[in-house]
Length: 324
Length: 187
Image 1 (cartoon, rainbow over the protein chains, first blue to last red):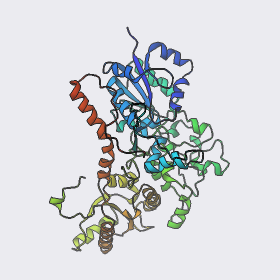
Image 2: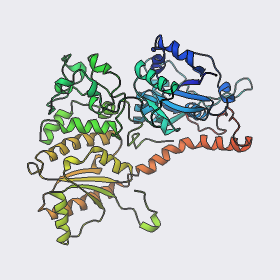
Image 3: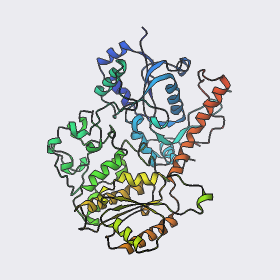
Image 4: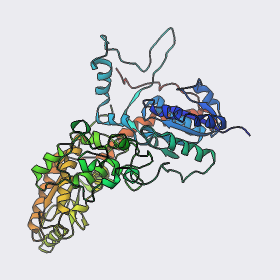
């Protein structure tokens, strides 16, 4: 029996998700033994035309990481959707837009100008920008265009499963791959991680007060944090209560509060608004001025509460931004 | 909440979603009604048990589905039927106003008022004032913006459709060239 074909692809991502696949360590040998990898640009040499030549639905599963930001990524997402039985959004960027989704706060022109002109390390006196096409030796090579809006994968193509995390842990990665190989798949659209908040598996849970009450918010660099006490009890913003578990509380065990990379549980529509609601309702003061003084401890609410989820939030993007 | 066509609905007027608490503000709106007070008809009132039940998701959901503004009404401080609900609402509201401002939505589109069961007159004043404020701000139009944003994805679907028509249905799409007339994007 031929081995099932699997593809890995990356879009607007940092490469951390690819790293996790390698982080499977010896387990990856077991995976490689059972599957036939047909595309993995970061590690192996395949051409897009090989992929195009494959029959539709001949790949069992594509694990795609990264947000969709350019026309090339959009096109590859469509092509892989067509060639695959299952498309799996792998990692926070494909799942929710991720860190890349934070670009939805800024106009494309501002981003391009900074990266090609203003960034301190850039040397580009002619202010050259990548062009969509140019003539060279009688050929006309083209480059992808950058979209104005950063999108999660399911805002571009139909997605069967989500493997959350920035990056997904080796444990949930192998759980997903095993489920796939043994054909024990959950209902379509599932996020392959427990559907309960992170606090459930956080070792600091015992010290979480029944009634949290904030007299201040502090960021991790502004204080010496107790290594065992619940972050909320210390006045540190922790996204744990509105974030899906499954990471084995990697950050809170490592001394840092949760930033929300596993996304919301299934009952929450908008992770950022939900944690904002929970934290702010428990601010101690009752007078407007005093409340605002406490809330000043969160200087960037969008960047804090939507660290990974802006593209999939209800508003998706700063609404005044242009698309031309 | 789709916008009806201008032909059927006349000139644009603001659409306000109002979350009123059962014990004070909704009763006040009821009082305004039975007292036959006339006020702007722009507010669609949703009764909740407490202003503390107003999840910020409700507010943003209303805006992204076509509301131009959201009004929240609750009991005066110290008068909340559930003791603390209105304070919870106030605290969330302070942060929500900052968040919407960062997301390009004028904070004046959101308003929180304490209106007791006896203040029918205040319902009238607040709804009228808010209608005026929103009329001055103009339509928010987020559903239209979503549609406009997603138009940048249309050229691909069109190109694939054209290729499939050309190659006779289900054959493999070739790695297609960039659109013939690319927008002068990165210039």
